[in-house]
Image (tube, rainbow, N blue to C red; front, side, top):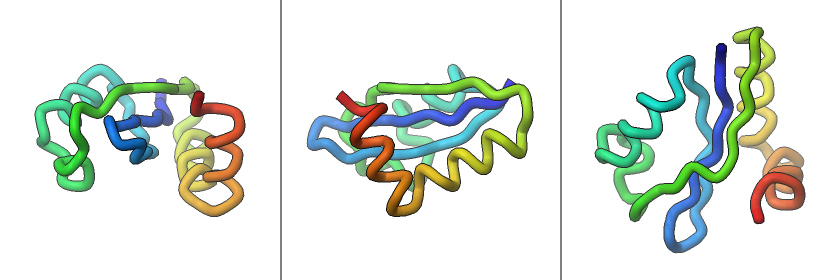
Length: 79
């Protein structure tokens, strides 16, 4: 399985990521082992979706990182 996920920190910063091992990857974020999220204060996994197809997961991650994807995530995925 391949996962696309959203992390949220205490001040509202959202990170969009992809991984084939979600538990390990979230733990790496929490342990400050991921360069792009080292500045995040206590990142929390707020949403994820599992895909069987790697390309579909990567395409959806890419979509969530552009303008219309940001709007979609804010409206439908982030409380």
